[in-house]
Image (tube, rainbow, N blue to C red; front, side, top):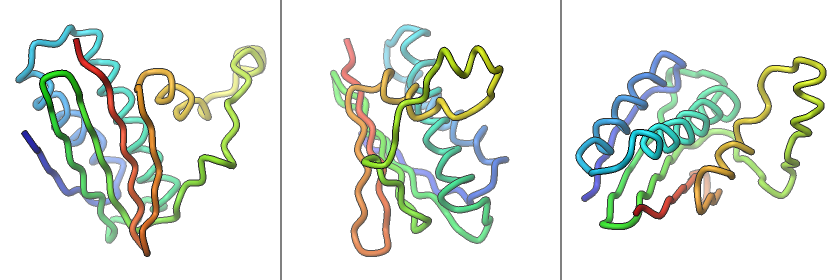
Length: 136
């Protein structure tokens, strides 16, 4: 089943998206841990898109789609903000972050560890971020 929501690029909509994802996941018999991991991964991606890709411009929007299959969760976010190049991304040195007390900068690494598949695509002026997770 496909679920969709459109939100403006404001940090205040992060809770709206978390609640949307939680509502979809609660319809399925998943452990609390798995649900919270998926919600966290989606929240990190959406926060990055709102803050970094769209610079919190409330005139811009994210189109979010979720598909639930019997054994797979699929998420897609579409926008026309600044595209993200995974080829330029380097995993942060977590030990260095801890040592220096640095906050932030670990979201993408976290998403990559939680989700089974993470993909970034640009078609014309539209950017797509797709996440998937196998379900028990």
